[in-house]
Image (cartoon, rainbow, N blue to C red):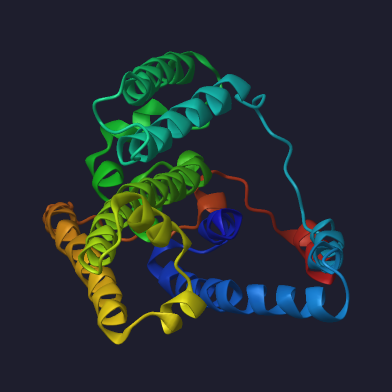
Length: 292
């Protein structure tokens, strides 16, 4: 997805890019739905290995695409420190909402310490290497900072030399935000659900140990075997645990709206990325690539 967006930015001007990014997003949505269905078909009727074999023809076809050698070496230290920072952030959310740890446990607060150290080392690395995976100069661009969920806006706001990096960074923050959001709000939902179900079973006459065991082992078959009153209580417990999660999202939605309204309007560029960088080709070379 990231590579496709970057390639489109290289060959299509920003003023025309929406026509291509829209269908690309639609194809991604179809693939997200059809991929698991096709994978399930392979597992049921062929073997699970075919979920990987099917990608071989696509990979062979991709070998025929024109390629460009990297100008700078891969920023391995940047990759390492960024991965460490992301891991610490996700585990902080997971440990904080866990009943086994919680927000007051020392094991929980070790993760933000690791996060601060990792971000610090990452920032130092990115400021020194020749080809950083996430140039710090992009974060001085307010449009880039405020529009990390809008690919076209981000690509239009950065230098043509940073289009690929900006696209990847945009998707990174979106994926990282999704992972942290799932961890945080999933923990909120699970904690409330456990409390609600425990109350349902204790009200039905179970002691604390029995209620905890019933809460951990409930499934559709067990649910159907329970008395009607208990079943209704379980349904209400799920509804009561899920609804507040959406209310907690409202402040984040308001913040996102305010940031979007504050974006500076920049006219869409009418020059493709490769043209702006002076890398566009023509003549015999272009004709040769068209025949591939």
